[in-house]
Image (cartoon, rainbow, N blue to C red; front, side):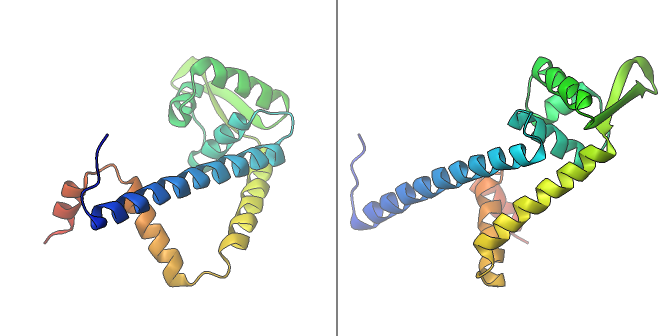
Length: 163
């Protein structure tokens, strides 16, 4: 086990542990919100269906294989959910123009309405949590989360920021 050599290192270690706790709390809160959002979208569907619907809402019609890859699901699970969503009237499908054996799926008008309403509900909950925050606090959070979730290493990031 690593020993902490100075009070500065100890303080940093405590802060890093607190950061880990806050990130875990954020992940838990996000999962809970995703569960509620999925139920709002359609109570007969698994939460993963809402991820598919949100992706289609944002990016438009696509092949099921493209959707599966984009949302990080296996093709079999995606296919099952797509079939259920089609039977509920949330998705439409048509033959792919370049390969009639393949299909293109898209949200139906009802699916689009449900996604929009669900996103609006999510927004209300998020707004309720941040409505008392200053614009500067929100901007700082966005900037810090961007740095935290960046795929670049700190060295690469600092090089990119240098003139």
